[in-house]
Amino acid sequence: MYKRLSLLWTLVRGDLKKLWWALRDPRTPGWFKLAAAGLAFYLVWPIDLLPDAIPFLGALDDMVLLPLAVRWLLSRLPAGLQADLAARAGAAPA
Image 1 (cartoon, helix red, strand yellow):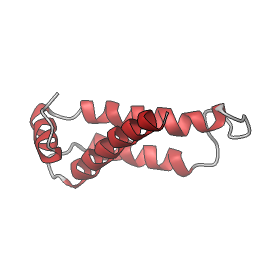
Image 2 (tube, helix red, strand yellow; image 1 turned 120 degrees about the horizontal axis):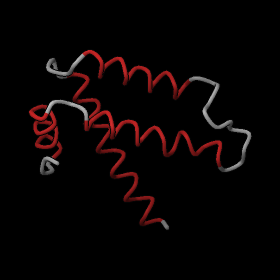
Image 3 (spheres, rainbow, N blue to C red; image 1 turned 120 degrees about the vertical axis):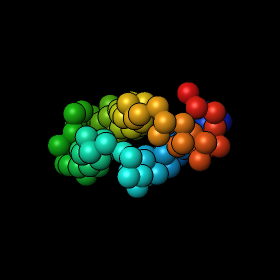
Image 4 (cartoon, rainbow, N blue to C red; image 1 turned 180 degrees about the vertical axis):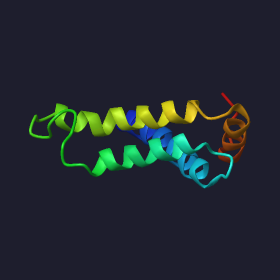
């Protein structure tokens, strides 16, 4: 269980680094920056897709949907920028 959580954290941390680098890159489209701001707003917004009052499912949207949305956004970047971000992260481009 701990090994799986550690792997998940490593993947999310890598995606967050790529997101940060993409937001600071001048080649990043405006829609990407707007979508990233929307994700940050959703994270702090008190109204969730799934209410936090539901014991396990309440945290599910923050723990699963947001990382998936970040990964989806990163996959929509131009190919050259994706390759630069992957090279900076030390991984092969997807």
